[in-house]
Length: 416
Ligand SMILES: [Zn+2]
Image (cartoon, rainbow, N blue to C red):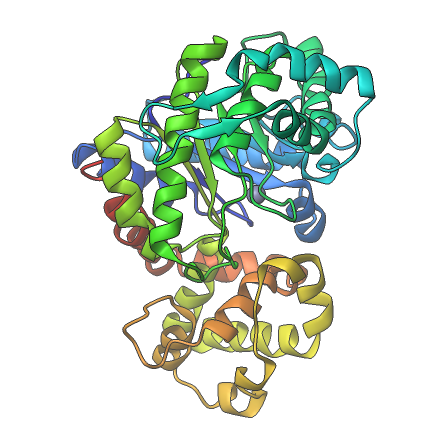
């Protein structure tokens, strides 16, 4: 099951925006960027919103019919593991095997010895074509990589085999994600992780490492962009070389779990993808829900009242909202506007504070991050929230499409 050179992982927490998202994907095709749309929703999101994987599948299928999309599309069981995968079996055809929790767990000495032996042919100077630096590979550097990653690779293999035993091999896309680990993986480490995945027979099609720098939710990258650029280029090189060397699927590509809105990385990524003719899977996850909130605010009346109510409640329940996302947000509480200030805002003021326009002085990244993780409050509004979305369909759909197309797809994929 091929994914194509470029694919876009989109989040749609409440299952209402699929057709608007596909409008953006179809516009991308007209601009020369062919993307496979993928809807991703993690177990954590399902738990918080109160939905099931079957809901995501139903929303995706309905969106495809409504938009008249005739290309391939996928439903991603995002960040699953052996404990949670069963609930996604029937609905998903893309599985993101999250093994970050197993990184650093010590493998059996015999497994480690086998790994070092299998990769001993790389000992010495390893010049990966296209990488910025050659690697000095030694028995001890191999052992160190194995010690950190072999248990995680084994876990990915066990999860892959479980899915394959139920669905049949070749019927789904396999992603391995390590992006929620504590430390970034170097490109050299990525190369040997791929060696180990190949040795375990995992037909990995996308791999999500952790990069250097901070990938906070819904706001731009915090870190050294030129360092990221070098690392990204080296990761592309490591993947291309691993495909040749270890007989991995030819379409294997990098998956960037962006946490949304890494605008400053898009231009360097596009240049490298173009220069290397490389593929990419981009997960943009959750900003679609923020466009819904902005659309409600701009609609005025009951929509604006509801958008304000959601912010005020999320603020009052700050610790509860932020806890599941503590490692991927940086909110300065002193910069969050108090309820009375927000209550006095017009819809335009609300949307300006919320929407990610770095050039707009009214943009407030602290408020944006809180709203990003505050979707539980919207979920609790139940039908009142969903009816407000339906009542303002045209406004919200337009924002969802424009956000995806203009802020993400065009700067990253068009011309890549
Ligand atoms: Zn992730």
